[in-house]
Image (cartoon, rainbow, N blue to C red):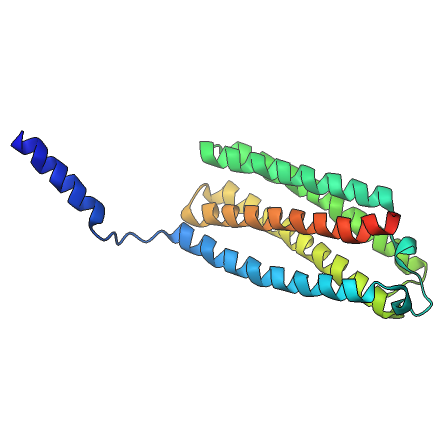
Length: 209
């Protein structure tokens, strides 16, 4: 009885002892959250600028929103983004199970679907340029291109990150560095999907209505 009581007191005191173990993955993930907060502030400014400059008198007699938006292309881009995020969810499931092949396969699927999105967006911008529609045409066009292109550049960077992680996981397996980079990439990719929902709602949907 005394031994059991002593063990209980020892376990209880252990709960209150300071723990000096440093969780590298959690610390670096927190740092990445701070980066995304700063990125969110950038996009908040871009959305605010777009909202202010989206009135008709800011088009300077040039094309407005209805001339820029292609509903079916935007819808296909949305499907590609969501499917890519779903594929990356498969990466996280495989990572939890320690399945390297599953992680690599999920990265390939997420990359291909993300590349479809970027390809559609590049095609859309190329069509606008062929019609002579450029960012310097008006205040509205500057805000439109700045918002949509900034998101597209983030998506392209995410694809580069995915390609890098594919080779790192293939060569190194699941080390502390590869795991926290995969986790941070998950946060980044989901964040881009959320931003695209906002772009689709406030730009593309408004152009259809």
